Length: 408
Ligand code: GLV
Ligand code: MN
Ligand code: MN
Figure 1 (cartoon, rainbow, N blue to C red):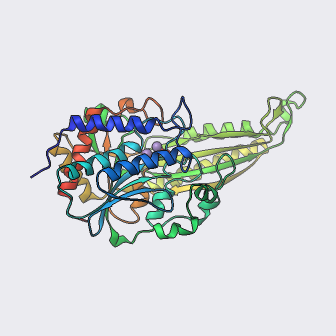
Figure 2: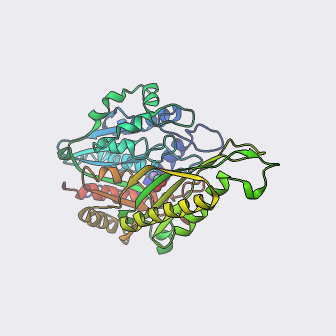
């Protein structure tokens, strides 16, 4: 017998939990909850408490991921992340964690525990907001944590390893977080769409076919600092003006199926009356096809080198992050489709332009993702919104998915 569900009530509970989490911020006027910060601690404790209330066996691993387990055998992992971007919305990541808790709670309330291993997880580093790394906490589970991550610094100069220690963790224990493939049956994540497709289609829920590949570069441009009042325009080697031209080159490389974003730029020494002698900016380039992404990166580098040569500047590139396009498991997609149909939805399939922890978990086990309609397609923005109605349906579909799950 399927568990009786009230999607409207589930949606209201999701909304209340998300509001509680959104109140945990480093700032009073914006939502900012960085990995391993005091706010992250409070959010992790809140989530751990909610998991415990459902009867899960809860612990925190060496990276501060919050994990709640039940049952025996290879586990179905369900989760998302609880850290945020700066000036975040309330749903990115947290919706997936809250939905997993509500779904498991539905089983607990009906005294109908799934007949297999299950693990809920709240990851810590998905957004790359504190350290120049992303997906490191899920990579650790998949056995792909990169040792060099420990030396990366945040804006205050604190390394990842120091932040872990300050949080009460031992970086030497990270390797112990890695799972064996036989421990993981699958990873499923529910996430706000962060795009406009479901809204345009009039559908509350969708199934992700693949997550597009990404390359992130840090680009350093060097010129010569000088007096803003005395150096004639023709004689300048302005690093920031060069970086600005390179930014426009990146914009031109973006096209159908390929997006390129310069999200940070910094001039040095950074004074109103000094010609910038150095500039640093980042490129985030994503494409559905790995070949198109690689070609675009090569074209961007060539364009930057041309611009630098013409302006007598130096330019160098450092690779910060690279991940190939990650397909979602076909069988799990079909099972999600059946679950969405079971709650009255049309199982619409769409790719994800955003990165998600599933990209790391795919190295360990089959993965799948369900998307929830997002108002106006707005995300990474405080205006981000998913309605309680849609969230309730999403939790209900997740329950139906778990009910029908029979391992890999
Ligand atoms: C994560 O939000 C990303 O796709 O950058
Ligand atoms: Mn996210
Ligand atoms: Mn995000």
